[in-house]
Each structure stands twice: as structure tokens, then as C-alpha cells.
Length: 523
Image 1 (cartoon, helix red, strand yellow):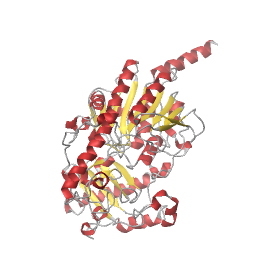
Image 2: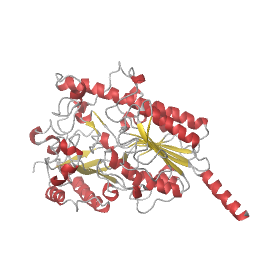
Image 3: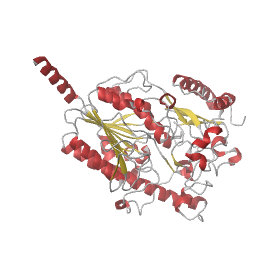
Image 4: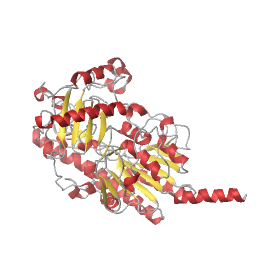
């Protein structure tokens, strides 16, 4: 009896020393829409609570996703794996229950686990002790949720009233009130906002109403950006590739959705951009205000000091740069993720890290911060040493990216590439990975996107140190040929090391092999 008591006391003491962890993730919240990250929108002060969190913790300036679309990015975060290893290449594919690795590993470490808000992995989150998640994308207003304990999935739906950002925060606070206080908690708190179409709570109608939102110059003028893969030969595809803010795109542009078709050219770009950004930032403001409410609760309940708080998004967002909307692209605004960590017991205030991390690294890092060790099946690496103020050893110098969903929804051609701290190399192979005979199985086959249409196969290269806005494709420039050759070699090696080759997609592999050694765009 005495031995059992001592063992139980030791376990209880160890658990009390473990930090609680709240992983907060918004949908499509671009880093440059957070004040702490600077940029043209910071003067609008859209995120005072997140800015304070960053000031009191650490902000990562080089955090990236490996596929800028909701379901694959979330799968990489949960599994610590790249898409071909975890099996989730696009929005259609579910993450199998046995691969819900992160909550499983947290349970092994003695944590109670919960997920609240957006899940979007198409199957019941069985690995969590508790869940209350939106069906698919969910609704902005009066959202329904699947809730554990309310019946069998997917019939276990419960209704709520209010704006989703408010409701999700209410549910999280209620969960924390009623949690198992004998265990540390691992909570994934996921907002739907600011996902398109940016349906904000009515109380934000006047926010920024009389403000002129700063505009990117590339909304109007970028003669050296892109390639035939993104613009077509002699700009022949500019009205087809990449949904636009202005009236540029023939089928899908923000001007067409919300404004009169009579607006043309620069006028259409200006009017649509102002509306697009104001709607988006009103959703962002709703998230930030609710985080202030959640942070106040944590402080009031004495949880602030012993809780690791992570803030991120599932990817970035194009906010008019290159006259593009949505995400999916390898370009900076889409590929970059915000990543802020607050933990007063360990992290000194006001730190910034330029370590090159990606979303496969999140799970290994959280596991190590909880007192465990990342399992070998995870491809990402823990950067817990950085959080502890130490240097990482043998860290990556580049991060791999691939977008699979050729043309679907936002007319973005399929592509892959590599980003280092100073450079970016991109190959547009421009073909869907499925054979055309399988298209009919998918919802998107019933809509006209031109998925079966191959787009041009070209390379792009950007010098990010001298051209951070990616306005000048330098792939043709003789000055960069040695660097490009080195990056191609590294890109090929990473595709092999990460199980990201096209061995299973022979038509794509043939395109890659044919165009791999293209020296210049003009060949």
C-alpha cells in the first residue's frame, strides 16, 4: 500500500510539473495580417492581443507550410509527416484514425486531450478524449458541431447560436472549467475565421469603414513576375490562371462576386481590394478580441504561467499580392505561417527566431515540450531547443513545398519547389495527379475548372534577399545559374528523402524528367 501511494504521489507530482498546452490555430490568417509581423497592415493595429503575446514570448519569422490548403496542412500538423507519407494530398482525402498521432502521443504522456472548432479532416477525431468540431468548413453564424458524448458520429450534431469565433471561445472556456484537473491538458483550439468569405460578426461593421487599406504595388504592376506557367505564353493565360481581386480572371474574381461588373482595370482592383481586406480584417479582429477573452480567463484561473500557448494558422493567405486571392501558391504570403509561442517559465520576452521550420515540426516540438520524445515515424523535427534559448544542431537549410490540386477552385496550377532563407525555386508541372478516368468520382468534376487541361511546364526563381516581394523571376538570369543548379540538386534529394517523388504518378514523372534540365524559360 505504501509503495502504491508513493508511486501515485510521484506520478501526480510529475504531472503537475508538466505544462498545459493550448495550440491555437486560425484558418487562413496570414502572418502579414498580424501587427507583430510588421508589413503594410501593421499600422492598422488589427491584433493587439496577439502582438502582446508575441512581445512576451517568441515569434518565428520563417515558419512555412508544405502545402497551402486546409486539409493537407492540418494532416501534416497532426501527423508530423509530409502528404505522401500520411496520405492526405488534397481536400478530398481524409486522415485515417490510426494516424491521429499527436493526441495519441500526448495521451501517453499523461495529458487529457481535446479539440474544439475547425477539424476538417473528414473523419471522427477519435484520438481525443473530448471533441466539439465543426462539420467540414462549418458555418460562420449559428454553427452546428459534432460533439463527443452526444451520439454516434456523424449524427452527434448539436446546435449553437452566435458567431463561430465567439461560440468556439465559449466552448473552450466551458471545457477548461470542467476539465479533469488531475491531469495536464492538451487543447487544440481552432477558429474558422478568417476563412473566405469573411463573414464577420455584425459588431465589426464600422471597424475600418473609413480607413484606406494600404495596397501592394503588385496588385497593379509586376512586369517581371511569374512565368508561362502562371501567365501563359505572351500573357495568354492571365485571365485564366489564379483567381483575382480585380476583374482580371474571367470566371472567378472578387470584383465579380461583390461589385458591379462595370468596374474595370485599376478601378476594379482598388474597390474590390478595399472590400476584400476590410471583410478579412474584421474577421481577424473578431479572433483577436476572443483571444483576449481567453487569455483573461487563463490569467484569472491561475493557468497563464504554466500553460504553453501556441498561435498559428493552417497556412497563409494572398491578400491582393500579384492580384491574387485565396492561398495554395508557393508565394510568400500563402506559404508563410505565423508561429508565436508564449511560456513565461521558459521563453524570454521579445524573442524572434529565424529558424526555418515547417508544419511537420509542430507535433515533434509539442511532444518534447510535454516531456516526451518525438517518435521516429514523424518526419518533422523538434525545435524545442530554440524555445529553450539554445541552438539547434544540423538543422535544415531549405523547406519543401507541393500543391497538388491542379486548377481546382482557384485555378492554381500544380507545382512544387524549395525555399531557403534567401532563395525560392519553383517548378510548375501543371497537371492533376489523378488520371482523367477518375475525375467523375469527385465533386469538382461537375463544375467547369478545366482540370483536364495541362498548363505550361516552367520554372521560377526568386532572390528573396533582394526581392522579398517576389516581383522579379530571375530564372533566366546568368548571374544565378550556379545557385539554381545547386537548388535543383537539393530539391531532387529532398523529394527522395521525404517520400515526395512521382513514382506513383508516371505522367507527372514524365513531365518532371522532360523539363528538369531546362536551362532558361525561353528554351
